[in-house]
Image 1 (cartoon, rainbow, N blue to C red):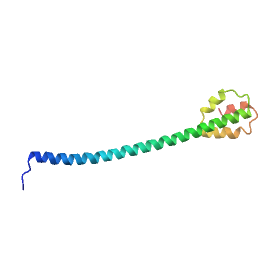
Image 2: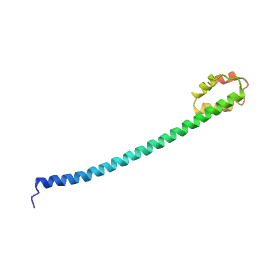
Image 3: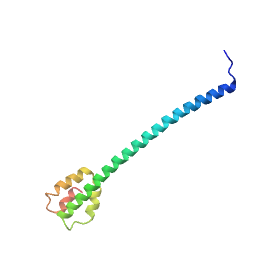
Image 4: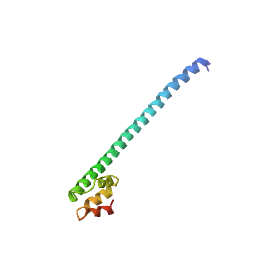
Length: 107
């Protein structure tokens, strides 16, 4: 069996090390790319949800102003704090409301 010199062992170790480090970097890059893609997707989903809720807030506010023309602006601030379900409920209930004060039970 031939003797392998120390320098040869170091060179082999470096070669194997470089190859492994490249593989590790490739794996790391793939994981980072996957994380960026997932982060971008999550951001898009959150943006769509926020946009949908903001649209409902504005629609409910317009319905409230149409139904009760003298409604105080404070009601707009109150509906901004509501979740999507409550906005849907108010939008439907507005059809049957006769007085602005009826809104208070939802806000």
